[in-house]
Amino acid sequence: MTWLLQLYPARWRERYGEEFGAVLASQRASVGLVLDVLGGAIDAHLYPQIQNSNSKPIKEKEEDTMTLLMLQRCSAGGPKLSPRDQRIASLFMVFSALVMAGLYIGLTKIYHSAPAVQALFYVSVPALALIYGETAYLRKRPWLTQVFILGGGLSGLYLFMLAVCVIGSRL
Amino acid sequence: MIRKSKDDAELDDFGRFSEPALLILVSLAEEPRHGYSMTEDIETIAGVRLGPGTLYGALARLEARGLIEPLKSEDRRNPYRLTTLGERALRARLDSMMVVARTGQRRLASA
Image (cartoon, each protein chain N blue to C red):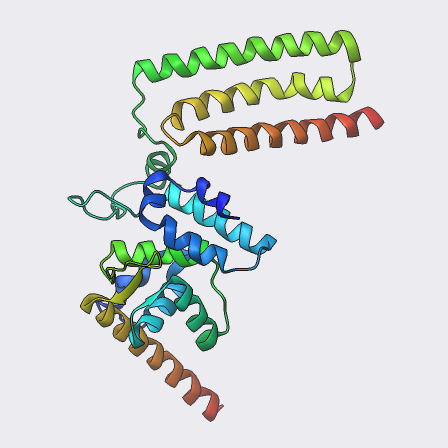
């Protein structure tokens, strides 16, 4: 179960990792425990409480709007993306588009218009938008977080579109 | 509307961690404790077992706001204790809860 600790930010693990591991090891493994730890990991990424010793704890500024706060919290580098960040995200998106196009052509040749292939076609546009956003805003997060959020988002989108295509093919 | 004191407002922005944070403060009011000991104590006094994700989410917030502080330990289980600020915040929160509880009981008795 202690592998779940890897989901927490590195600085958080440095500070609380050992004692957290001791408490985690003392509890019986269950779905509830895993969900609790996952929730804690997401919270630790979104609301990091550990600051440099010379800085003050994070506190919301009253004048910030909800949208700005969300952007600041979701993006490791803050909402200000440099032209370089945008170029990297764009290149990654174009590369992903080419991979998806190749995959679609290859699968169509083998499986023709099977729902799984159709779903890939329909999911490509929102998937590319998601890939761009994730690449731009999560680039400084730990790789495990990036894989978790990007993989989860893409899987969710694809499964949703697959369900739609399967239902549509049976009507 | 009950007017909150400044000390009582210390726990206000804890969101879903405000109840666990209060339970942690109550647990530490008796003596310094480490994480495992806190979960055991909280289960005894409140009947809920805090998961490690919830426990350390609340602990990190309490520590960041200076309501609790870690004590030196050679063991990997770091004990924590209440700070003066934490003690004041706990007193203020318990006082305001007491006012609500007394009012509720009085109204139920006269109903």
